[in-house]
Image 1 (cartoon, rainbow, N blue to C red):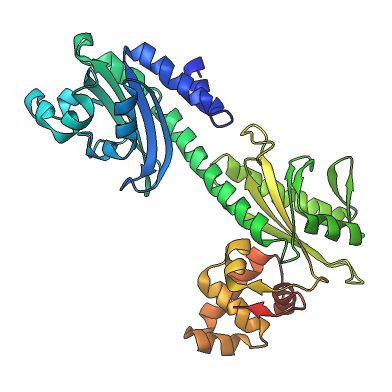
Image 2 (image 1 turned 30 degrees about the vertical axis):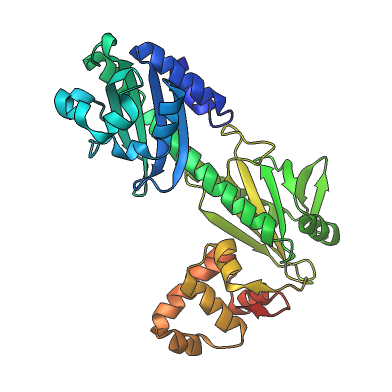
Length: 366
């Protein structure tokens, strides 16, 4: 990987590096301005915008969704095109986009590439030159194409990090009142962030401890199960998939220290965000602490579907699987399949454990 591409990945930690990436490509392409914009395909949900060079007024106009008017439409994925391949000189200069954005900027020739990140998000890359510099040539397109897969991967990671931060905000806003512990750790169990509920649970549970800022579990079986869950979730980081949650549950013979821990991959927190240091969000559920929970919280905390969360509500209200299936208007076998999925997501093996985990000795708030 060359130094220019490395700037892209460093931008995940320090976004000023993305400015340097555009500056470097401007230099290598002989361009006067360049930009990378990631947004929903309709442009209504911008996620990332990096623009360098050119006239400040024109850049600001372009960034304010005028990029949706540019002639680079229906491009083949990861394939650069020059403006003269898409539209004649005459039509280009007569276009609304040219008149609104380009005409008074001193720019004339453009090179563009679109990258589909997923079904919803598209990343647009554009570079512009003054008329006197001449058109972009084949070697310019080849140079831009060489960065295509790097830009796609970085844009995808950036989106996942944004999703992760939004989910972390949900946890911060809701877990305290649910009496659920939440802590961020690295693969060696070094603690990066921890909430008050987690500290309370750890202090009263004989299985759990914190020593030298490390999260420790006294029971070897439980500790090994958690390590395996972290290893499995860690594999998904390589594929930029942070959505997978694994749950592990432990019930000691006396049942006084029963806890469930869910594991989710994340790229780090506001204090330690580094792609090279994977982080994991651990949520600790103390089965002996009363709390209330909503069906919405169930869906978010355990990645349940709407129907699965409703099933949990009915089962926790003392209905049988048959009664629940009848209320939902589904077959018993379908209900049982949903129940198996719920068991896996919530880290339980029996319906009684499910009811105990959902209720936590308190009512459900629908």
